[in-house]
Image: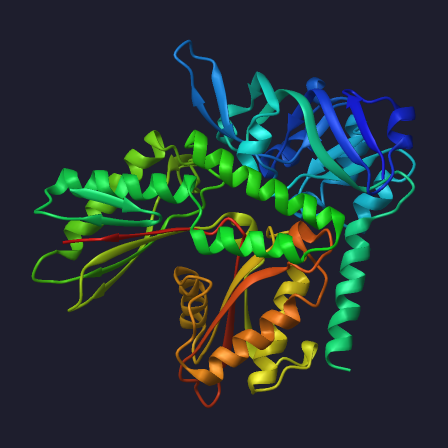
Length: 188
Length: 292
């Protein structure tokens, strides 16, 4: 298990070096997208998302006195909700790294093969992650509601685990397979 | 006067409407920033037992997050859920309709001040309206109290209701069948609902009662002993089996898949056996407010 520091947007070569199980620290610009955003993004061409690192998240925030936004809590949301949209999103926007929680399905694993990675953040550790967000660049599509809007964030050493690598290895799939086997053993 | 001790708040004297509102806002603040001691202890015990390095790292980060939220009075998780409010009231002292209005007003204030994430989306108007609490009232002769439960959408999405028999998981109408439902819900959830989980389950003759009673198990401390020996043994057995699955915290593998398991059995109907399985995330936010 290696520890890697990656600046966004990551190059193809850097992403190919990341292995499932590696600890990854992202620094630079990341974009959030949730349910409404995914549907919208597939029907439009949204320039800021091209080559971006995607974060499945709907932050909690407050306004500072000068009108700028202060992020209070920003943990990951469940990635599986976007399974259906993600293969096309990866293709359309040249996405090379996705951060979220709980893992994604076989379709996403196939779509990432040879080109991208899926990384898991720790669900509920929202204050911890908020500390890694240094700036809110912009909030797009606020008409979706602030949670579902597309946030352009600046992060510094944002810590995640690579759970699916570009070679097609998925640690979540291994855990699931093992847990099903363990259940069988309980009733053997 | 309002006194706070951990996650228990006590209001004394003769509170006016605005006193009740501020006490409920405080309840929200304590709930979203401060995890109950039993849950924190459960996570620490899990960390001690855990041998998987990735699981250890996950649990350590969770504990670090708990400290940060506590010190900075910031919400533990960005998803403050749909507020669930369980009210027990003495009818000679309180009126249900008045309490309902107070709780709604307090929720609006808390959304702005604590803050809570505005989670209620009105499909008809097509916009977010803030937060809308779900309130359950029960009359009592004991002391009046309000309990607040906040769980995020991730864990709500992996909760389920089963009907027995269920051939797909080999579950018949008996305790073994109920056990298979609970295990199946955890297997299907994997790491998506933020384990280590706190699980509530109930068997009842109708569907909404099964899900309601499964979920209100979350109001109990995870250490609270089931007074019915048969059920206490059942809970213990299931918890052990869940933790033998090796799903682990956040589904990265490990021994700490669930911190607690609570179960209740009500009357079943000759034709209908419903098993509700409410899966709670590790960030089980709950507070109790004792009313005068």
